[in-house]
Picture (tube, rainbow, N blue to C red):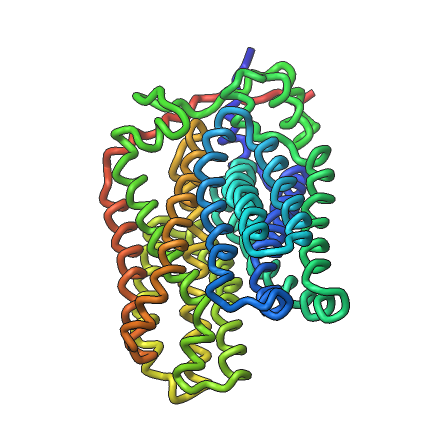
Length: 449
């Protein structure tokens, strides 16, 4: 029986309808993730008013979701490498959709914190695993572009949440806002059950030739794949899988640098997205001004994510992302210098968001490109999980920044340091030569029916 290297085959042909379907489903999952992740921020003012509580009382609710995301990512990656990407994605989508709905029935902050923690488990598990699945269906020369385009749906989901909140909360209350946000992923999960295929690469690692051949046949029906043995690139010198692979000696240094990069990047991202309005208000900006500027920062990430994905495919992915982080660090340092000119300040904030948010959204694509299929889901998920710890640290670290009474310029200069560390981490990764190369299996030319 002749052999076909699946990755070489996908790399050498245009995208099929099946691959576009996987991409669109991935976009919808990330959109739902952004919608449900941002929902708690939109209902917070109503919670303070309805429950008669102050802002510190909401901290367990906000941090509970972040902790859940970190744990969900750490647990789900190894599960996806063992049981499959599809079922982990579906289960996590059901989990965060169901508990977003249940959150609408909370009567106090303790209940809501527990519900949001469980919601976070699903949110944290869904994002890295759908990124892994979509990456495995894309050709190598378009992988970063397509994965990054998919991640553009996350800030769009947050934006959609804002539009829904403006309509639903005044008319029906915050409870209905959560219920509407939760129903969408539940409906989507039902669609995924029938429409989302399993990873071809995962099926082959489990020896499920017939299932893999069926999916490849749906990509190209002109070839009889039942007479072809589908194979993967061989991983020379390393028999580990999952977490054991990503922390094994050849991969350890680069793995640690990806974790450090994501940790520092998310620290700054969550601190700014959560507390930028407060910082700008203290600096003398009006409500209209700081609301607009705070929205510009993540919106810049939509454009940055798309452009960076293209650059990663056109140039060396790690170096392209490293350069973006270096530029973002510079933009962070100089941002506060232009606070007196609202237009110029908004432009710099947009560019900083394009760089930092775009780079952060590009890390899953970089990680998926770096690890072989045997540890890809664990690699992407653990990078996300460790990074979420940076987000948790940033949420608590903001109190210390306010205690220092720093000026706006000093705050942005201070935040430039973690971004610079992210860039340096990718520089160290680029110098690591210990990773074992994957040798492709030579395949015979396929005969058409």
